[in-house]
Image 1 (tube, rainbow, N blue to C red):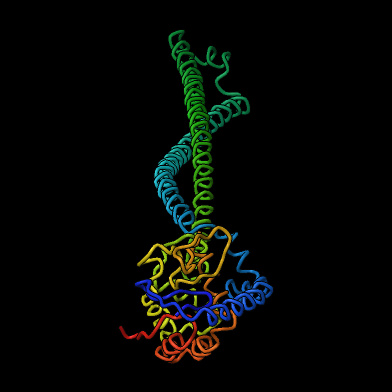
Image 2: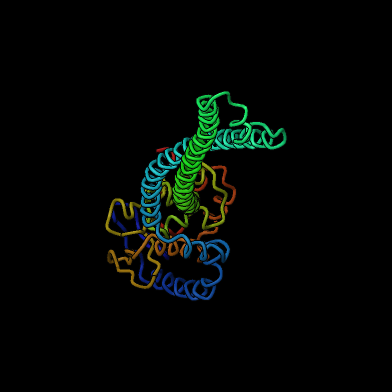
Length: 364
């Protein structure tokens, strides 16, 4: 039987009725559609997409396929950054070890310089003490040496002895000054190495920080993308708009949710069985139109002589189905869906309605 907003079962068969009845039905259809058009802007937006924020969600989410590609790209970037971080971390560890080694060497050089300086100070103190003793006691003056010597040979011996002591003092100080200079030079050289090691470690540390920042940014991006993907997958009506893979079950979920009916197993099972009984999209070329509705939509094409439409997208087909079932002829179906506790009751309501699907069972 022909009826407003839809067409027969999956096999496409229908029966013509008396012309007067048909004309009456057509006038009723025009009246119902006129009312539906006035209410569509508000009622359909609320029923199909939920709150106004839902439309904003779609604008923000983009297509599911694009988000999935973005997630894959972000994960690949994170893998590359993690590999880069591993290399940078190895460099940082090497720089840290190098700095530790240089610091240890610098400590040794500083200790050696301290020892050399201490020895030089002691040598100078010894010489200065000897000189002060000789000056205070007046001993070992040249005159004393000459007058006290029993012979010239004795004087020469004492003189040579004093000269030897003086030379040893001088040699000892020169040597200690040389060693102190070497120690100071080593300390300066090691300090330069330390400064270079500190700079190298700082540069690598900056690299680590930069890579770590990039990883954190990608991680935040990935988290956001994954959250948006999950949101689409958990909201069937967004899945319709996002261009993701749609099945009879996901379309049924989207249809139930768009009607504001409870998302129960009975309701979903009833709609899936209804889709199979009608045979739209998956069993014919009435694209994006699982329930074979005839609701006109922009860009939709006519599938058959009765006027079943092929729509341009899942979102448009879902909207058309919602408009149709809310056009005033299908209150029994809506009531059964609102109860949500009896799939067969929904199927019976469909069979009893002007939709014309006929009897079907959600159990098959």
